[in-house]
Image (tube, rainbow, N blue to C red; front, side, top):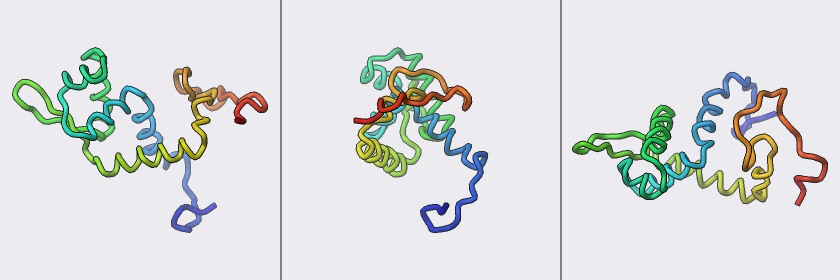
Length: 138
């Protein structure tokens, strides 16, 4: 198996842990909505709560997660903090590529019995489910 550069891929799962952690950070719809709002510029927590219709504590918790993942940063402005994307061009590229991938696969991931819409948690490898025969076909 070769990677995108044509080099034989010898990556071990443990080497992919940081990438998996990044995708876990992006795996919540609320966090994605916050990131989308921040693509147009800085926002206060109050602005984001109004835009998203969520509680301040919820938005703050998700912003803390995004900050811990290195995706957002904040700076003080008076008594408030202004949140912004740390690497907007790269994040926008990842999100645009994800949209292309979703479209190319027909959004079938929404039906995934492990991670699709309506599922919760992160199943252990031995608990992963398969689609019943023919269910994932469109």
